[in-house]
Image 1 (cartoon, one colour):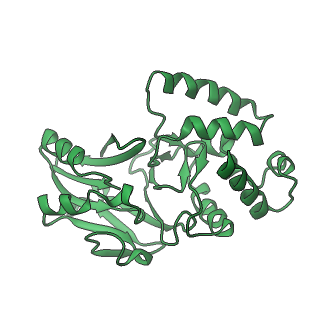
Image 2 (image 1 turned 120 degrees about the vertical axis):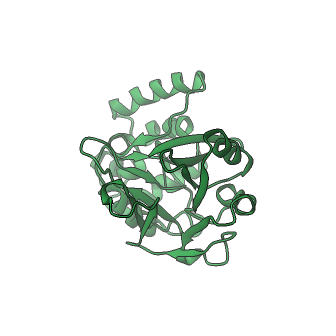
Image 3 (image 1 turned 180 degrees about the vertical axis):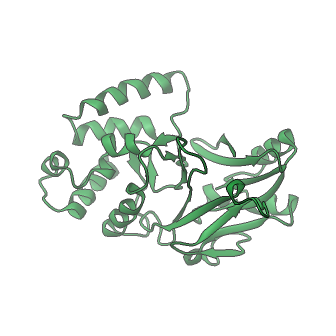
Length: 265
């Protein structure tokens, strides 16, 4: 499976998964249709699935036009998003499975994704995790606006406790998991992160590295779960240094205070 990152709008990413042997594709959170259609045409593949993580317009804006172009495409989303995702046909909950491609009699070539229910950014947010099918390769996590490189999504419909529970699920995946987050927010996130985790030397070096990357317009997505666990304050609510920086000994309270500071940053 090849993954293509498509930059759209001011800072969004759409992710296109390709199976070039079978000439099929799946798209994650198509904010716009035109760039997706262009990539599908360039690779001469058929769109068979739309995987939406949540209902926000910059994640589902291209659904209707893609459905018009590929009437047999299947549209997936969270069960709690019923009525909010254009064209949704499959309503997913925690622990459900999705399949990209159909390989009868060849299970090793199937890509079976696991669904995580991760409310917080919205009340219905889900993520899709495709574990590796070979040794020594990473799994792929499409988490929408929950984990960002160096940050996390705002709490529009959820609570800090929900977001901590959601992050806890994702934090248990292997450290080499690649995180395909839906926005290029990394530089701003890291500028904030050093204010609440000032003694984290790896974080400071990451800020230097990302500043150079973004100066040269190099994308910082995907990131890795291991890197986020070491440098992203929103995955470190139970680390003593982070708790001390916001004068808290409680994980959820620590997360909430860090998120509150980021909202005002």
